[in-house]
Structure formats: C-alpha cells, structure tokens
Length: 402
Ligand SMILES: Cc1cc2nc3c(=O)[nH]c(=O)nc-3n(C[C@H](O)[C@H](O)[C@H](O)COP(=O)(O)OP(=O)(O)OC[C@H]3O[C@@H](n4cnc5c(N)ncnc54)[C@H](O)[C@@H]3O)c2cc1C
Image (cartoon, rainbow, N blue to C red; front, side):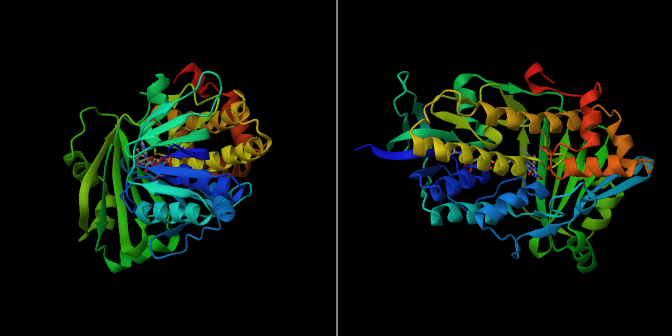
C-alpha cells in the first residue's frame, strides 16, 4: 500500500529538518526520508547570527556542551602581517552572535525536534526516484524501502541535489574554491582552548591559492580545513597549509587529530531550476557557493523556514500544485545567494574586498553594513555597503554565470 502524506522531505539535514518541523507545526502530515542514520559527521559548523531567528521559531537551544557561542570572525593575511576582527555586535542591528556547532549533535537535535513537532522520520532510507505527474496529481516518491504519495515534495538533499541532477539544472561554479580537506583536533593546550572559546570567533587565514579555517567546537575541539583553488586534492595539503600559518601552528601546538581527514570537491553550484509544480529545492539543493563566509547552514535554515511559510497556507487552501508557488521565494533566496556570490568572488579575485577587510579607514556606516552582510542579514533595505556593492562592477547575478 502507498502511504499518503502532505509533504515528503528528502534529506534530514538542517534545511529538511527545519522545513519538516515548521510544516508539521502548521498542521501538515510530513514524512522526512534521510539516507543516513544520525548522528553522523557532516561539515558546515560555523553559523551566522541570521540563523538565530530560525532557532527561536524551532524552540532550539544551542547552549549545550557540543556548541560554542560565536561573537564574530577574524581574518588574517599573515604574509602581509595583517589581521582584522569583525564582531557581529558592530552591525546595523539584528542578532549579535551565532554558534559554532558540532554537526553530528546539531543535525540530530534538529531532526528529533522535527519528529517531536509531529513529522514522521525515516532514517537509513534513500530516495531513489520521484515520479512527477504531468497532469498535476501528487508525486510518488520511491525509496530503498517503500513508496509514498505526497501532495508536495521538498528536495533537501544538500550537495546531492536530487532534482538538480535529475533535471540537469545544476550549474557548476568554477570561480570559487574547488576542493576542501578538513579534520577535527582535540587536546589543545588549556590556555588556547580557553582563549578560543571566549570569543568563539572563526579564524580565516588567506593563502595564495585558497584559505584555511579554524572553528572552535565544544569540549575544546577544533575544526580545521583548507579550501583550495588547486585541482587533484591531496590530503597532505592540509598539514602543509597549516604548517605555513604561524597562527595555526600556535593554536594547534600539541593538539591531536581525532577522526580521519575528509575531502570534498566540486561543491559550488547554482541550481537553475529550483522549483516546479508540486516540488521545490531548499538548502544546498538549491545552491551552494563556498564556505568562506559561513553562509551555508544559515541560508539553508532561513530558506527552509521561508519555503514552509509559503507551503503551509497553500496546503490548507489546496493550491499547493500551482507551478509558481515558489517563484517569489526563489527570487528572495537568489538575492541572498547573489549578495554572497558577489563578496565571495571579490575575495577569490583579490579585488577590493581583502583590502577592505584590513583597512582602518572604513567609515563606520560601511563597516557596519559589511558586518551585517557577514552576519547573513541580507534582506534589510538600509545597508549602504550593499548599495555600494550593487552599484559596483563586482556585482554577481548568478543566473548570468560567475
Ligand atoms: C568544505 C565545506 C565547508 C563548509 N563549512 C560551512 C560552515 O562553516 N558554515 C556553514 O554554514 N556552512 C558550511 N558549509 C555548507 C554546509 O555544509 C551546508 O550549507 C549545509 O549542510 C546545508 O544543509 P542542507 O540541509 O541543505 O544539506 P545537508 O546538510 O547536506 O543535508 C542533506 C541530507 O540529505 C541526505 N540525502 C542526500 N541524498 C538523499 C537521498 N537520495 N535520500 C535520502 N536522503 C538523502 C543526506 O544524507 C544529508 O543528511 C560547508 C560546506 C563545505 C563543502
């Protein structure tokens, strides 16, 4: 027998769980199908303050031993002896902090939250096919364990971008980072662990062909990674990059790696077709740009919440089958992606932005505006820094390519 749901959510990462939670709260009968069994390792640990409004709606409290409060971001250009700290409290308004999260614990808490809100969650089950009906009848979702009928399907499959691959609409972006190597460390020196935990800042070290991150996590652990423009990823590049950086050598002295190295390549893409009749993509399945400004999870959750807000009344009114249901939502999200694509491209092309980071001559208005963008606060209408970016030649519009 084919079980029937209002919404089938494919993938139970931050976007899938957020949407499922809010949809279930809104009265929808929701099924989340997640291929892994949680907890499981996932990269994407540094969040932006704009995520806090979603945490509030989910009733999610990140103050646990696994996560660290994050006050801002520190950027280093070590060969030039430059460093700058951006504190989210120095923005145009909005939440003044975010969190650095252990994704195994974070994703587990979010999916359990969705379940408590009333969603049915199937873990260890992979979606293999979605049959869309050309006459507008509910799609059929086929998995490794069964088949389900749903009035609407949300693709929250992350970089696997189920519909993006199925439709051939996943357009790669080659102008940003091409690959990443990352690992977790423990046993930091106690004074270093304390220093890192006090601010919880993410550290970003510029390199000639990429950059390094250092993200403090709970219980004195540290996530480190290299994002590179070089092709043919080699695991030893991470250790070599860290050895080049005096700041990394300082904070990692005596620390030990826990778990394996991880590698990921070809993660940057824009999905040209992110919605259609009775389906849409949320989170990375719609777009993932680059990790450098930590926008991924925040926009995944904000986008999922916004999509759920459109879907709840549509389901209640029986007009969820409209082909344009998500067109305004996709345009809102594209604005967010364009803003970040613009600053990310400026970062990789070494145009203006790296200099702007380190100058002490920014006007306070521009600095606050830039900090607001770094906080993920991209939809406000009073940001002079954003207006300046939009008027400049640096502006990226993803539909025209990068
Ligand atoms: C190197 C690197 C570093 C990053 N660092 C950061 C960072 O510091 N901060 C930040 O905010 N973001 C970061 N990101 C991005 C972040 O990882 C993502 O934006 C975020 O995880 C997106 O959430 P999501 O729910 O859309 O997808 P995911 O978290 O990827 O979840 C998708 C889920 O779908 C499941 N799934 C996939 N296919 C199927 C299927 N067929 N059937 C059932 N289930 C399926 C997967 O198992 C997975 O659990 C980074 C990304 C990379 C590549």
